[in-house]
Structure formats: structure tokens, C-alpha cells
Length: 619
Image (cartoon, rainbow, N blue to C red; front, top):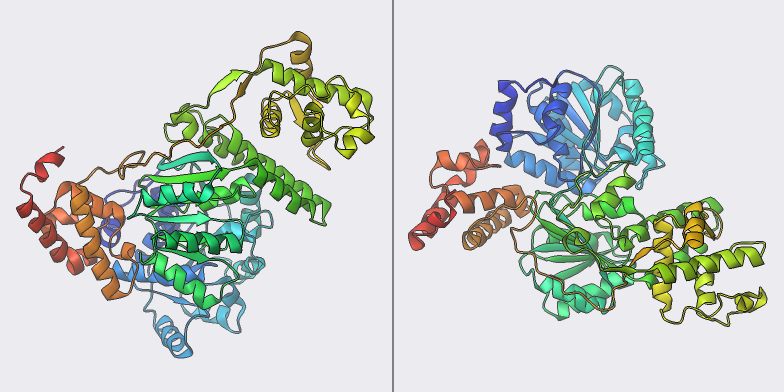
């Protein structure tokens, strides 16, 4: 049975972070860290990984060293810790020499509790010796999946951490990540040589995220409609190419939306400026390639849109995970088109390494399955990470909220499966789905004629459906287990035993109707969905403006001052004294001293102008 946190630990949690209780698994991880054990922690984005090493750091005498690849994030983390009254610093290539020397001097004087460094710095001359002099109490390896070649974001410099373990054999290590398959988890434990580690794996489920897939049509108008319905909310739109990101940002700006682009083709200064504008709420929308995201700690991203289908589920999970890190309701919208799949397959076909082609093809098929499936989106996504969803209707994805329309698809299923069977009889080889569709539609394509497939009895019997519909039927029959797709080579089709039985016995088969027109994009009310905090929206807007003033004055992102969660609680409970304000989640001692008077004054003024406001929110 887990040991409860001590009174000292709970007092520090409240004093420095403003919280009265832990999130799932945080308490156990903090206790193990304080006991000097090695720890592996897999917590979802927004699950509170940082607190797992920050809280033990303030309760320990020595220095906690955090190894992170996210140079862009280090300053934000240190700014946030400073606002909470915790002495922290970072060392990376962005620092002028004079500043770096000053920080080194303070490290030798023992003035810091937490130090953030990039893995490359560890191997710089004399740095490991310096660490020996600084009284390191523990190492925390953030984004630990970067150490694995099987991870989606492998960083070769992370392999140097084995030397760190060799030089500090008795110092506890903590490895933290937000996403990792079983294979990657094993690799992390092995590469870091964790000693009898306590392992904590939280659910990959993000209950506050609303997942949905829309059929891509006039995609710019679809995105514009979605964004314009949320004028005060921050969002990320992921695009497949640099050009697409630039064009989308330009067109959104022409429509009056504060949008900027971000991609690897921009200069470092341009990228930094646009990222900073987004983090500071000076731009509401960032249109980006997958180059954007690592190191973004902005907790109030309210939506993530994918204009094009991602390459794999793990990347998609990581990218959508940048929405709603504060636990409030947020949207994840994917626009899907079979044409995009064809483009991706062409890119994959151009890869020179056969193994790389096969892996990429398999990952893309899994992503297409997610997009086209009528199952609960959570069920499909969690299964990828070896987690079983057992709660039935999740209530927070499009397939659960509005189940897809189905029909008796026995006849088209029989036609398609019969075609696969006839090809296997007539030829000594199998073919892919596109070729089967060509036969059903009576195509005069060269391969159809060359192989005599125009003489099959299934030739030209599928005119009642269009190509996209036949392709969707084929992919669904694969998902349902009637057909199987060869995972190697050219993804050829064959009948399974289930498919042969269905053909022989004419077993009824239900298929999903393909969307034929754009469905309305319903606006999500600000407080709907899992994790919602209903509050007085007018007061919330006033507090948000006050927060922005303080943030600009201190040159930090607004969420460093107070999170949206904290402001929403203020706008629900109307604290008009320091005692009551200190009970609001996220209001620690230092923030109460720095900002309490101003926020209490704003709330009091609002209540004077709106005397009945408080009555509407009495529990």
C-alpha cells in the first residue's frame, strides 16, 4: 500500500505550488524520490511530470539536475519556479558568457535547488567534474524516450547519459516521459541502467480532450470556421509541409485571425519570435510543421488541428497532447482525405530502405484505421499503447457522441471479397486494394488488361459506388478481419478464414457510410466536457486581462502568473480576502504576496458592479 506524503511534503506542495493534493501517481513518485530510489515515470502530457522532481528538490539539501533536450523550455521552467519562490537556473548555449559565469559561481556557492542542462553540455570539458563539486542529490532525465532508437524522437546525444550513470553510480536517477510504447520503455530502463527502479505508468487517456475526425473538403473554410468560433482561445494547426504552414497563416491573417507560421525553414530568430508571440498570447494561432511543439509548455492551448493526416499514431498522440495541459476541455480535430493517404504512400514508396518503407506503411495504415474507424477514438488510440479501454462510450469523441451511420453492406462486401478471391484463383500472385477497386469499376488500366483481370466475373460490377467508397469498404473489411493485408512488400490483399466463411455462408455484414457532405462544426462552450470548470465568463475575461498586464510587466508568459484553471476557480468562488484566495488551486505563498491584492481588488470591484453575480455560482 502506498505511503502517504508527510506533513512537510504536503506543506511544501501548498506553499510553493499552491496545491492541496497530488495528481495521480505524483505522491508515490515524490515519496520514492525522497527515499533515494531510482524511478521511471510515464505520465501523460499535462499529468504533472515536472512536479515529480521539483517538489523533492525543494525538500532536499543538495542540487537536482534536470537533463532536457528542450532549450526553449528551460527559461519558462526557471521563470515559473522563480515565481513560486524556488531557486533554479539553466545552462545552455543561449546564455552570454558573462551570465553563464555568474551562474557557475552561484552553483559552486550552493545557491540553487534545480539546474536544467541539455545532454550535450554533460560532455563539455570539465562539466562532470563540476557536477561532483555541486553536491548533486539526484538526476532527472526529462523526455526520456529520446534515448531510444525505437522512440519517435530519438536524440543520439542522449546515449551519453550512460557515462553520467557510470560517473555517479550512487546518485538516484528519475526518468520521465509522456509517451512510450512497451519496447521504448524497456530500452529506457536498459540504456539508463536504472537500479531496481520503481516504475509508474499512468493511463494514456486524456479525458479532457475531445477527439474528432472530419472529412476534408474545403479545408481552409473548415479551419477558418472553427478558429473564428474561438476568438479568445489559443490553438495549433499542424500542416504537412512548410509551404502549407506559410500559406495557411497568411490566409488566416487576411481573415483577421492573429496567426503566425513556424517551420524548420525559417531562421532561428524568426522561429523564436513567432514561438514567443504565441506563448505570450500575442498570436492566437500557430500554423506549423511537426518541428513545432517540443519545448512548448503553454498549458492553455485549447485546440490542436491537423490539416493533413499524421504519419503515425504516436506522433499524433504527442501533438494532440499539447492541447489542454491544464486539464480544461480542449479539442483535437483531424481533417481526413483518402487523397492525403495516397500522397503519403507515394512519399513512402520513394524511401530507399525496404525495412523503413514497411514500417512507415504499417504505421500509416494504423493512422488510417484511427481516422476511418467507427470505434471510440480513445479505444483505438489507447490500444496502440497496449492499454485497454473498458469504459464503453467515452462521451468525448465524435464516434461516441454521434455514432457513424451504418448500413447493410453485405452485397458490396461480397463483391469486394469475391474479387479478391477471383484474382487469387486466376493469378499466381496477390494484388493491392487499388487494383481490386480498378477491377470492380471496370478500369482499362494497363495492369488490369495485361493480367487479364478484365475477363474476371467481378470485372465492372461495382458501378453503384465511387472509388473512394470502395477503398473505404476495403479498409473496413480489413479492420473487421474479413481481409488481411500483407505487412511486407506491396500490401497485397487476401481472404481470411472469416472472410471465406462470410462468402460461402452469405453472412450479413454491416459497413459504415462514407460522409458525403461537411458536417457542421459545433462550437464547444468554454466549460463543456471532462475537466470543465463552470464560472462567470465576464469575470474570467477581466482576470485574464489583469494577468496579461502582470505577464507583460514581468516579461513572462501569462500562464507563469496564474493558469486558466486558477483564474476560472477565482471566477467561480469570488475570493475577496487573502485567506480565501489562498484556498484557490495554484495560489502559493509567493504569488499570494505578489499578486493577491490586485486580483482581490478586481473581484471585489466586479461584485460591486454585479451584486447578484455570486448568487449564480453558489454550490
